[in-house]
Length: 386
Image 1: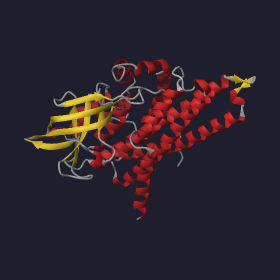
Image 2: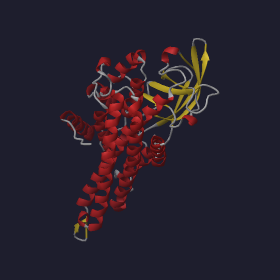
Image 3: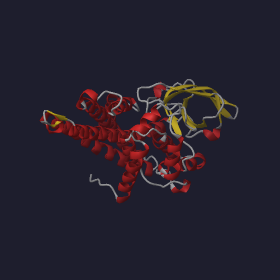
Image 4: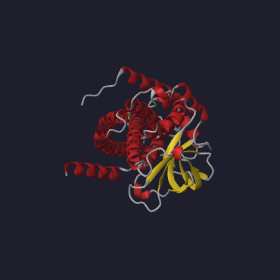
């Protein structure tokens, strides 16, 4: 497969890099870590209403730009480089794909224009595996009631809209699961921000106490939502892998800049052969990951363009598993090496490597760690061979 960025994709990349270099520099990231709110509302206004980043995947019929997932991945790579703290990832990689794949024109017409205009940010409340789903849905008159909880929802405390997965009582496995679009001001919903390792990305616990939802809020066919949720999470894993790729590249860039300016024994540290070898090893990991990520992004683009074509589904699951496993290990390796090659100041608060190390460790577990994804890949390949 031959892959090269188009002129439009390069324009997206370069403009995002210029903007984030100022709006999400080290000072801004650290300020966001200490902010009580989960994100900077002014920064989100710029992203949504001036740059139109949330509109990338949204079709033109709903006020979006109608571009593909590759363009979004190009953008997410730069967000990962600069540790952007905003609900962009959850809105574009979790909520938007779920709505696009749901084949529910009424809900798409209601929510996608607001997402495209930057007036609403949304996320998905769903565990990685169906067996872990704790929320339940019960019929109540003409509608339903939601009970239970979701323990680790990315950007869940500040989202305007939650796509909530819930299970019919008595069902098991992947059966009996539905998903509902629920505004976060609905009575009975309690959201609690969690204290986590990565302060640049917030998680929340969502408790559901007899939350009323109507039939019109049901995103998918009743009891048949798991295939949609699984595909959405794999697409999001590819987006996260693009972020991790950007973070790994920035960890290498920080290391190269520091070793070039630091001198020891009358010469630049970067001139030592041992340092060159370790930096070359980092670059090798990054380039291998880059290939996996862009291939996976192309598969996700095709899957979304074909409205969830079952023929592409197996390729999507395999590509997402490969990209996320490689990206998680590469980011963590490069972040750890960056700390080591910064020497005695590498772990101090004043320098940035620790920020990337924390993001790398947290992202490694988010949407499946490498071991989990390799198990999924093995299952998919062995199933195809059977």
